[in-house]
Image (cartoon, rainbow, N blue to C red):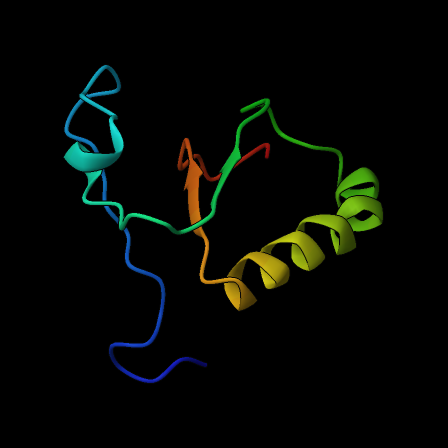
Length: 78
């Protein structure tokens, strides 16, 4: 569990069509960016369990690289 101040910083856009340029989001220059988008539909439990190691490994590598991760922020799907 991350200690205070060391976890991910989350920035929510006020509107889905909001300005998403790097500067408007406050993204630091020179950092890698991983954009993760896909279905917002519910994923079958068996399928989710089978593919879970892949996004975990990718996100762990992104964390090691201090990458910025951009998602739609849905609680289902990707």
